[in-house]
Image (tube, rainbow, N blue to C red; front, side, top):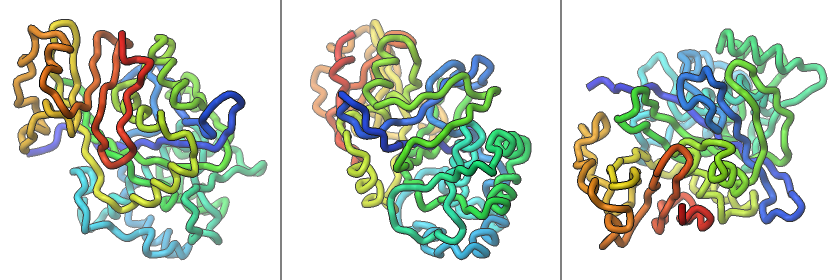
Length: 352
């Protein structure tokens, strides 16, 4: 069965930035899509986008070999379970563990001008923090446009300035599959990257209305106050950081679990009397998914259509779900530790 979705990569960028009167010592990068965007227009999202054929080009193998990138950074993790998006793509394409990272780096550069690259002479450092390249001799907006027009140009950019995409600094986080009721679907690999300082950004005008560096609670408050809309994946992922106040702790955690199995998150909906409930893996009401379940909702989505949320909750011990009443009125309720970061409810949104 052919897969009715596109493959994509997204990057959650955290940068150290101690702010007075804030419990967080870091901020997270998001940007607002333009009104012309074909997917989640005017929404607040993390950098990222669809994969390009050059992200998978075997010429990258020669590039990394030439720059003496340690082989362990390029090794495929075959001993762990990963979603469809990591499946081998054929002899004429590089491993998805590399190409997905390259796609995330390229898209972040195209959209916001952050070049997550290390000096070619320093590709073996073990710090969980990533480098970013910035130089007064580099016209970032010019190169953004060049890479946007021809994705192959990312390699030319690296050769020009003697840098290498820092694929080792991107840590696998999760994989999201758009639910079947959306007309446009993506399977998206989410990565997380930590930076020691906030880099300069250059917004690409066709895709980016504006960008911001904010703490997790600020981003969620903006959604709650209806000043910015967070799509469900961003809304869900930001909750994982609510209780994580130190970037060093997140960096240590990311490095520790590197190479572990990567979860696939496919929200499964239920119609309620006054709202819609999206359930996630670990929830008692999350249906068992066989092959067909990835392509369509083959569970009873109307099972609770005559019940309120509280009525539908009766007898539930393990829950991981988002209830949505409208575009902005949503709340996440979760008591499940999914193995990434401890489960967390947004207490400020626990009541509509």
